[in-house]
Image (cartoon, rainbow, N blue to C red; front, side):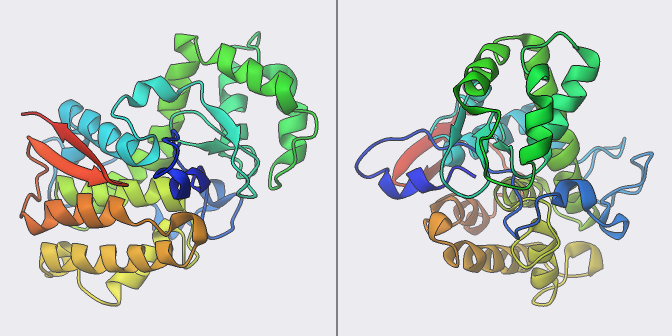
Length: 292
């Protein structure tokens, strides 16, 4: 979870990388999410409204998905160039070991291990395979034992390979993007709501505790009904963003809530539930624009 740098942006423009690590303290939240919270059936058919005629959520359309990646990168990396982050790796001192890649896979929260294991099955001669014993040993901790500079260099080198970039994309989608947007579609949310869920999944991880994505959703449901349950879309999203903002404020590394206040909430106030472009927003005082 690359959050510490956010507190220094006013002084030093740091690149701030994504957090797909569970914020509720569950190192294996992505792996152990209860079946009851699975956002769609195995055949992908049980999504609700706000999908196309094939049942695909609005945000999963290629142009909208690209927009979502840019929106997240503006908050997580202070750039719209999300594809420039495959080789990023650093320990930011958040207790989750190394944070790496386009979505902030963490050595302490299982998803980085899952990524390297899956990649190695398809590409056994890759430059990260030799670190698998060490990655398994440090999973669930902030330890660098058996990793260190050789590992960070190997990650940066491997990230130049298109196959490893595709592997990062695939794990991002399977663990974070797809569950978030399909759950949002089942809740009757349009492209904006689907993005709101995805961005929360990125930062807070797919945990069921009070600071994980599914926990935040449960808290929001106590305040407002989803459109699928007959509630108003704007009122529900306001409730979800309120809950998320409070969770962010409770953690030192997340206290800058501009990604909610001057981006997502701005789109909501403007009534842009479909995330139509052009879009203009601010994060951490920096202004971004995506043209039509």
